[in-house]
Length: 354
Image (cartoon, rainbow, N blue to C red; front, side, top):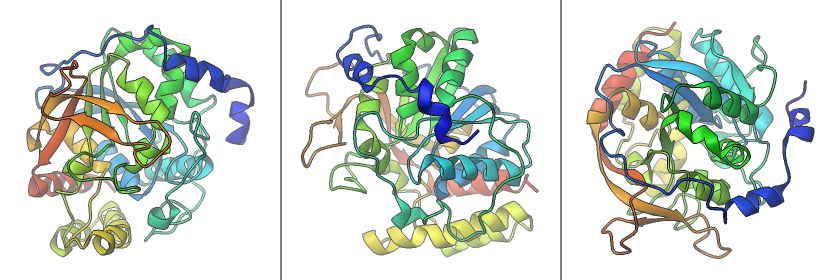
């Protein structure tokens, strides 16, 4: 079944989404600092929601190389860096490269809740991955759509048992929460790549791409009451490639190491030129590093809201770092990370793949 046809019946009226922003049916946000950082070595039941994207593909390979810590139930895809058909294909490519046919891939929302769709082909290329050959993978998508999968799986899960890693716009989860607010019971934690505060944005002066692509979805997610950890540009722009770090990946001697190195060589050029950096960030892969080794990162519990008003602040994550608004903390906002520790862990895990 073509990706787009999955949504002719399943995508319910946008009006319901707008009402969800006003409803009080979702839980009041609370801080869960102790639960947000599991002990090293604990096995997580994980779903990865993603819009591959070069850095998403690296994140997926990173995660699929870590089965002892991450029990991946499925990959769910969303339109973001490129349209849904391409993000879904790229997720299946990553699965094929990692030799993980056991992980189903479900296609999700083909567009944001309310805003006009935007893409990032100027950074990720027209196919969503630069530096490597892109082709149609042999294994197809799973039957059904991602939103239905999330609702069905989280309703059936034990209380607070599933971690959702979100590497793109948060449309799929927002749709699921709007249809079935009770699914929060099954969620242990949301770990998101998105937002910016001290760093400033990467698509506007104030907004980071994942949030800007669907700020109305972020509003719903931030009000869900589920423990949330966000890895924003504040930290991803401190964890940068170098020629030595990419060479170490290439010199592992397996195909996966060469693939990651080839992707990075092409992908990081834009940010290096745009920001004048000596290396480039690998944004989404920091989510996987946090799940595997949270001791590499530091942050604090803060209140975060999203500006969804039209104007120069559209898509901004308004992060109350100093607590001036006196509102309850709803996010563990990560601001610091160990760059060398990240690349050592990434290299070690990629070495496990074919």
